[in-house]
Length: 374
Image (cartoon, rainbow, N blue to C red; front, side, top):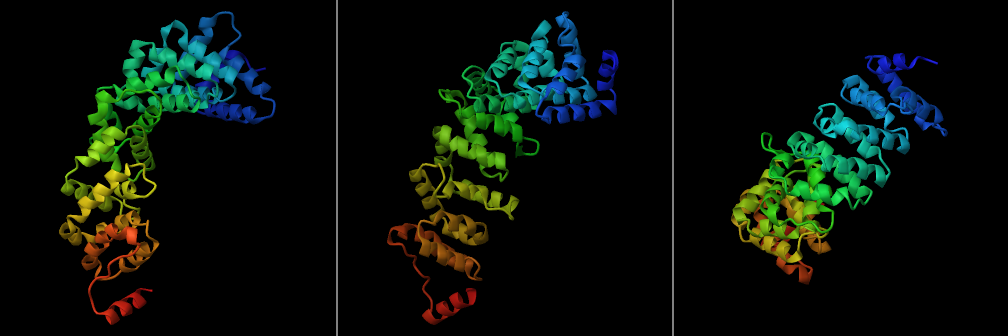
């Protein structure tokens, strides 16, 4: 029974606004969400014959820091409410303002991630992509979260309309490398990497024009242990095998070693991220994988100097032989690890024989050392 004007003012209040958002979330969880729907229709005046009135209310809430909290709770109430709000957003050609707004773009992200309807997704997604101003603003570094929400939702709902379109635009974006790789850090940006991973999963994409960029992104993501970087490496190996394989083939041996050392230095507590490409379950072409291992084995002197940085990678790459892996696990902790490293690398050539050459030393000393390690 509260007057509508008072409810609308409450949405912008620093205390009442968050409380109203919590109330909406609680009401939406009830088996019958009628009360939540009724409250939303009252606050937004969705039943008003003047359609511009509801569009103005949605626009005002979306661009206000406190009002946006309420609107993000509103879009989670039901699919009908989400579709109605999308229609209000499209009114008066304001969709570009929603994309450009520093607050309103988060409302769009919440709406996209909450939607479960392909119809609602296409209505909002195509409205953004068909507006040239909104499209230009979308393909900038500080809107990667919105691209990520649109691409991931389109992939999840298997959209054949806005999904391939956003993927093509994103891959053709001239500043794609800047969006995915924040050069100032430098590091792989989470939403940029997630957006690229989702875009690459759509069928029928032409990546010819961005192969060099994808190569540089792949090599940077390869040394990063973040989960979104690991996902991006796997997706690139699966859906863009040509540029990623070329990037690895063209690597000079010293560069590959530098990559592994760099990754080991940054992530001592975690498994070396570069080692993922040597795992048996890696999506990397087996022939390329074998060639890379040969490259490493041809530089045993360099590897000996940095033995500790390579042991975990080597142990993971030779798991096709249980005996080899067992012995490597034992000698990896020995004081003479650096001296044994060339033989461990050489053992990759003997996987067919399922054995490993034991370093030439006195048999009694060798047995005593293994016993001590046990």
